[in-house]
Length: 90
Image (cartoon, rainbow, N blue to C red; front, side):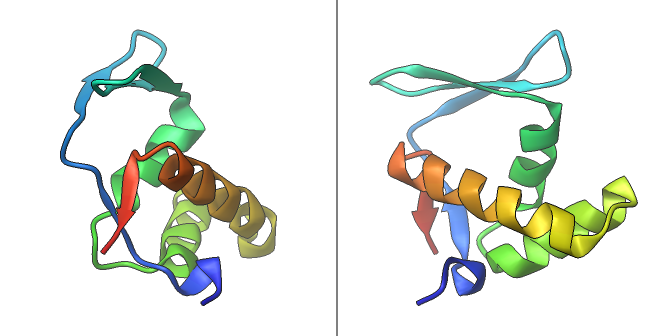
């Protein structure tokens, strides 16, 4: 399946705190991870119901950017967060 068609949900074993810079601090039993403001926006649209391509569309619309410019980075971020165990397939 193409990553754009995947639907993810946030992992349950993590604590999320807002950072001073507008990003997020994600803490698990195994480590700490920070998301900058741009990644935080993607994180907020991940809800277990929207596939990655819809998340990318929402991010592009929220930023006033072209979908094609946002789609690749959103896919890469979702893949990386899944590799780290911060997202799970819904």
